[in-house]
Image 1 (tube, one colour):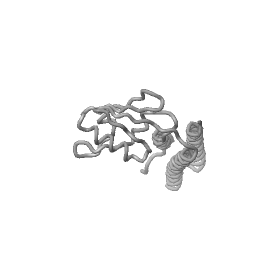
Image 2: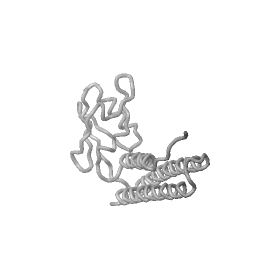
Image 3: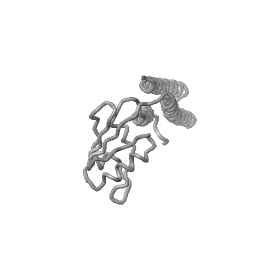
Image 4: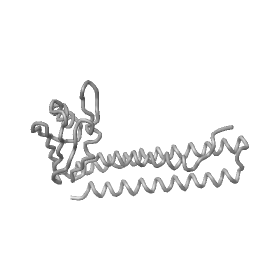
Amino acid sequence: MSEAFSLENLRTRMKKSIDSMKGDLAGLRTGRASASLLEPIMVDAYGSAMPLNQVATVSVPESRMLSVQVWDRSMAGAVEKAIRESNLGLNPMAEGATIRVPLPELNEERRRELSKVAHQYAEQARVAVRHVRRDGIELLRKLEKDGEMGQDEARVNSDKVQKATDEAIAEIDTLVAAKEQEIMQV
């Protein structure tokens, strides 16, 4: 007996691709401060690389300022270094166990770059969704070939897989369009 077909399983895998893209988009810097901007940063702490949120608390005191409250004062230098070297174009300022991260104004060229990056994330998510579709279609063909599913049932399920794929890609397009608009606002 081969693997059973489950449309819900395919939808769940597509949703994971979309959720991954949402996380990537949240890390893109727009004109406003967001605590999620620093989520991907890894800090060299206690002999290993740890996510920033495991050594400090990030808050947004002002629209153009992030505040990072380091729990262990001795880690403040490592956290400041990690933020500075994160390629986000940020220049943190340490004040004891608190690190202030002012967000500079985005210029037009940088906004266009960020928009391109958002589109790259979207394309990666679309490709992942299409891979899930391919896996589902291949499974249906195998089940049909092995005689475990009729031709009509396989065709109906193929149409359902395609519909789920179209819905997922439409959601990706909507999310990236909203992010692009957010980035390009002046």
